[in-house]
Image (cartoon, rainbow, N blue to C red; front, side):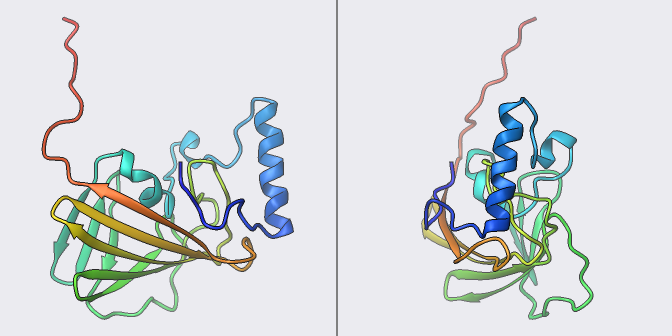
Length: 178
């Protein structure tokens, strides 16, 4: 479960109502706010926030860093380009980044409002802006620090840290029942 700071979430009244409506729907057996139930991408920031429980691969090539952990990668452009002025919102938004020492500083905008910020289906608006860093703190550890800015949904920014551990051995065994 994601640990956001501050907690409880400092939701604006409109977004607190969305959460309350989702809770009420869940009590009647209806899921609201889960894009995955419709076989649609969970999108950002959920892909990064929840992925420590899922295998991911980080690939660095000239001009970009990609996180593969689902059907589509999260591509961070590191070639100096700005965000496009005519960007249409998508599930993963548009990410640009730059290196300061061994830390990648990432800026993500343009995330479609139907995605969620975490496994609890907490909502955000189309104004969501992510600023995050990825730092290798040990040979087998990455720390990702993420801050969410959304003046329509949150009274103040939210922050969390995600720790990725390098796995070199299979963590799951497939069972052959034959």
